[in-house]
Length: 172
Length: 166
Image (cartoon, rainbow over all chains, first blue to last red; front, side):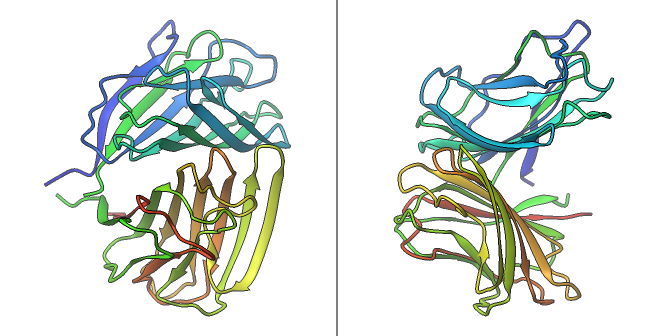
């Protein structure tokens, strides 16, 4: 029987941390992708979150995003066309052993259409800051199938025990 | 092996239309998820909306929170004839594809009114979240997406998934 929601790969960051998490050679046999992350950075950003950057197929052009969120009790909405899209993760200044959560959804990732996708993320701490809740709508204006997704922290590493799991979803 | 996340149906538009329906939805799942992708509209004053079981009465309410890239907005609608799920403050794009995910939990019970959660993602327009209410205790067996003016364009894709809790 066809499995319609399947793990493609999972990464758990080892001791010492890693500079990036990379999913490459993503098969084109699914309809959608879902990437679920639990991440923490390896540096103290003085009460602020750290940025999480995402690249698609290592592309540096044809990217745009728009977001909505709340950071430390201040709402915000931003828009940009940059090489990366970003959301936020916990820094080492936040409560120990707390990792941010994010869910990325890539519908039609292997189609010949442009590639819109979404990010929902939350950075929490057992204190007043940093706290960040964010929704992002992203567009990669390329007709190429997505075959690589790369996550990079603002600086310099993802901390040990961070995880990222890529799922493939079939719509038939 | 029982599938816990199962595609029920997919519709890919071969021509523009103002209505997309999923009918005869089985009651055997716990929750539904409707994924809309590559969606564009023929009219930027559009707002993609949802109706259940062909109910066009003023039995819907919703609250939306959105960001247009500069500012944050919120609004509420009560006693309206459809639920808001897509562009709420800026209006969707006629040129860039956008995605929407709609969750309809506990859709087949006959005890409670029905609620839904939607997330709309327009990189060139707005990002928003809606929570909606359909004031009916009927089990949902039909989901219809409609446009308020103009059409969904050809190539828009809509997939309905069923989720089993056990």
